[in-house]
Length: 130
Image (cartoon, rainbow, N blue to C red; front, side, top):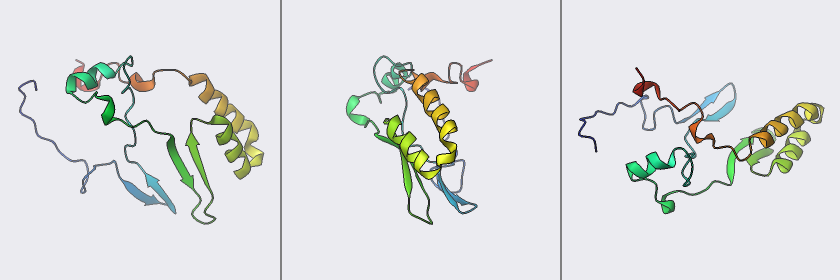
């Protein structure tokens, strides 16, 4: 688009780079990219997506589940969704003794509600500075 000749180098031996799934100490870690922040008009990154030709609304699907944590031994799981009351209840059912910390976590999540997180840490990308 800007006349640059580019080469893309993969960061791993398999497609997807470090956006992959792996096992660690009995846990399955899914490090894949599951969502793109800032795709709605009015957010900080939407103009960039528009410039790149990827901002069409029909290309993005809003997520309802952001993550799922599964205890593979028991099969019990907790889903992270926008329903913070349900998340609090589910976490407390796993660990009632952690109720105070869970309440603090949920309070922090509520405090962030409505913030445009698409620009967090990206106001000056390192490769474009200096």
